Structures are given as C-alpha cells and as structure tokens.
Image (cartoon, rainbow, N blue to C red; front, side, top):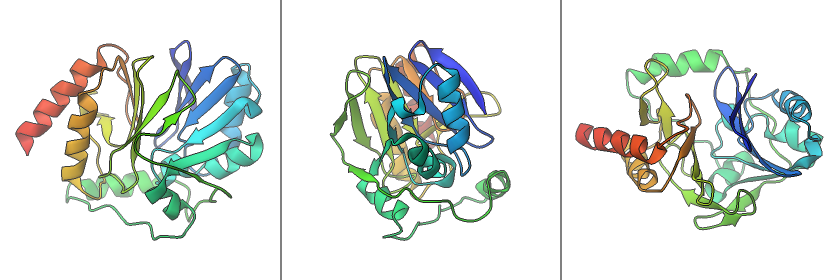
Length: 238
C-alpha cells in the first residue's frame, strides 16, 4: 500500500485495487473507505507511521459496499474500535440483510472487471459487527462538518462526502480518474449508468478544490472546474 500526502490533513492510501483516505482533525482521525480484505492491519500500521494510534481513528465511512472499499473495514474496526458507517441501503448489504446486486456491465467493461477481480482476495470478506446507517443530509463531525450526499447509481447506497469548509469532496466510485490519461470520468461497473451521470452533475455543481476518487489520482487544485468539464463531456455523450 502506498501512502501519499495530499494536504497537511489528508492522506491517500492506495491499494492494488481502489484507495482510501485518512483525514486528520488534530488527535481525531476519520478513514474514508477501508480497502480490500486484509487491509485492516496495513492501515493500522500506516496510521501508526503517521504518528497516531489506530484508536485515534474514530470512524470509518464507507462510500459503498463493494469489496475493494469495504473489505478491510471489519478488521480495522476490530483493531481500532472505530465506528463503521454506510448509507442505509448499503448497510443492509454489509449486514447480509439484503443481497448484493451485481453491476450491469457493458461489453467493454467485462474484461476490466475480470482483471480487477483477479487482484482481489478470493471469496467473501468479513463483515463489520455493527454498521451505523447514514442518510442524505447527515453531517458528520470531521473536517468542519462532512455533508453526506446520497448518489445512487454505482450502488443503491453510494454516498459522497463534501467538506465545504475545506473544499474537499470524496466521491467514492461515482467519479474516477482514468488510468490511461488521468482524465476525470464517470465511474464504471455501475447498477445504473444514468443515475451515475446525474450524480456526476450534482457533484460538479459543488464548490470543490480537492476531489478524491475511489480509483485514480485525485484532483488537488481547481477541482470544481475539472468536474464541470467532465460533466459537460458526459452530458454530450448521453
């Protein structure tokens, strides 16, 4: 796992598939997503290397239920005592109270999806013992107030987190940066591509300096302009 400082209070944790983000408010930390299964100890070691106890991480906010983002949550929560949070629709999947709907793959996505799965641990992942539910409009106590935005499309319970005071946006897999040329694009492997495009337009309307994606390099300057350009391009493709 690579650990990259994006801002003095924000680090990117990059895994073989997907990535997570660590936000620091003094002696209280927040983890956004938790990597694939087996990542809990690796994340705890990274937190320690940055000068904090794993117990300083008060919450793990999951942008959606997919294994490359939620797979490490149970292990890390057991190590740190952190609360695990997810939107109510995806919390039900994480608790195995609802089935995990598979993505509706376009033909060109199928080989990419298969390649990503080969990089992930086989089998199901351990589920957190408790998952607190989030809803549209909730405000979490980090980063001066992190606003929960329900952006279904990638999954039914996908969320983004907007920190208006910091100009930071965590998009989950609703938006990505292309591994080919770094261009910002709608996420792939979705349940409903039209809803993802609508969510992209919604997120592009926010005042954002730093945009943190579930896959691909974040945008660390003038993110609003970059997201609006991506929304304009995607609108033209519909």
